[in-house]
Amino acid sequence: MSDFAKRSHQARIKRSPLRSYHAAQQGRNTFRTLFKGGVVIGILCLSFLCSCFLIGWFFLHTSTIHGSEPVGIVLLTGPKDSVRRSVTVLWMDPGDNMLTLFSYPDSIQVRTPSEGEYSISSLYGLLALDHQPVQTYLRVMLRNIHINVSGVVIRNAAAPNTKTIANFLKDSLIDTSESSSLSLADRFRLWWFVAFRSPQIRQTTITDVTQNPRVFDDETYDAFVQKNVSNLSVRKENETVSVVNASGTARLATTVGRVLTTEGINVISLGDTPILLDHARLVLSSQSLIASHTVDMLSRSIDARVDIDPQTAAQYRSDIVLFLSTKEAADFSP
Image 1 (cartoon, helix red, strand yellow):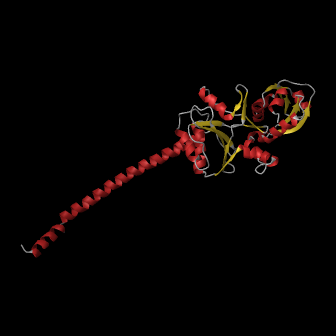
Image 2 (image 1 turned 60 degrees about the vertical axis):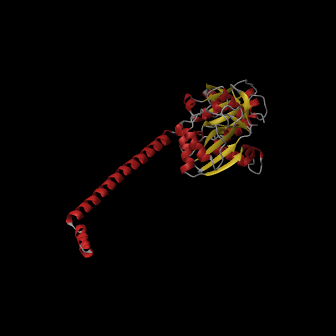
Image 3 (image 1 turned 120 degrees about the vertical axis):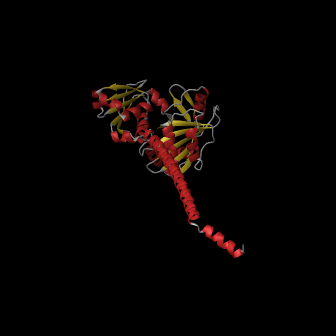
């Protein structure tokens, strides 16, 4: 057969209806396979995204950290059984979209009713060694200011900085090697704030705040503490408080009144009484005040006996009267 005949025969085969039908059918089958695969992959991706959304929604809504009020968290880092650890306080301020990392030197002393007075890192190192539960509220005295934090995260890792804080919080979500007083939902919310809100992150040491006048003088320091430490719920209640010095120590009512005002409590009067007390008293004008945020903050700041005495409260024209004892004179000494 000549070359021309061969080419003509091959062309007729290629153009045959049966061959064209098979080719078209094969193309349609390939398209159906790809389409079904794409649908399956799309459903899987959509399911994954929905699962992530639901998990994120659950954690964000079950977290105890809500609203625009600043939240303080202690971050303890370093070797697991070390008595001395690096201590950083993380201030999350949703209102200003700001995150501040405060490094605490070991000279800062922590005062607790049961453990006594220890350096901040030594106290938590001892708690870790003894396998005791981490305290929820940490009372740190800084220039007569009680700073309360909402919880503690303990990790065998390097102390975070402005560049590593996002990864530090992300790793803290899945690190269960050590105890923490923060729930998984709270830790997730902290990480979410840093990862998706993109806050302005700054870092400083507490000595810069308390000792360097070029950073914070008395007036700006009070304003800083009032914004970052005071309780918005207390300010909304606006219960009137009178502070009465029953310790015999001069100017104690003024010192404590300044502290309480900075924390957001509405102090309307300061006074002295010649009757000395060895234990503080918290006198309320009515039973309903026991459950108030103001009484809760006062009780956490000062270990006082609570009494219901409308007459005494009326005498000082206040909702709450705080009688300071000789114990507070020692606690609030400069």
